[in-house]
Image 1 (tube, rainbow, N blue to C red):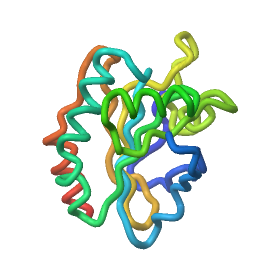
Image 2: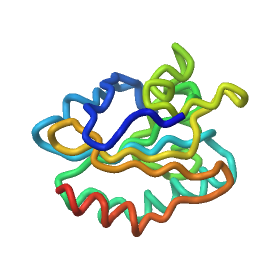
Image 3: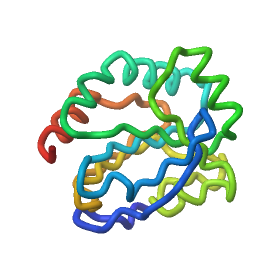
Image 4: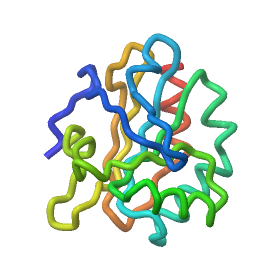
Length: 154
C-alpha cells in the first residue's frame, strides 16, 4: 500500500489552496523542508481537531525553514469555507480534480471512501522523503513527533 520509501524523490504536484492560489511542492526545493498532512475530510471531527492544533502550533512548525501543507480531496470552495469557519491559515490544498491524484501518487488514496488517508510525509530541502507516518482514520497524529522529525531535517 505505501510504496514510497525514505530517500525517494517526493512526487511533485501543483494544487490550489483555499484562496485559489497554486502551490507547487518543487517550489520549496533547495530552501524549505515541507511537512505534508493528508487528511480525509474538511469539517469532520478528527480533521477539525487536528488542523486546529496545527494552526495553534503553526509558529513552532514554521521556525525550522519549513512549510506545512494540508491536502484533502475536498473542492477548493469547501476548503475556503472550512478555513474561514475554523480560523485556519494553514495552506489547505484541494486534491479534488483529477480526484485524489496527488493522494494516489503518495499511496494514501482510499478508493472505498474517495478520500485521502490520515498520513504525513516529510519532504527534505532536496525534495526527498525524509519520514512518513500513516495513522488509522480515527486516530489523531502525534504533533510533538512531527515537530521532532521536522527539526531533524531543518
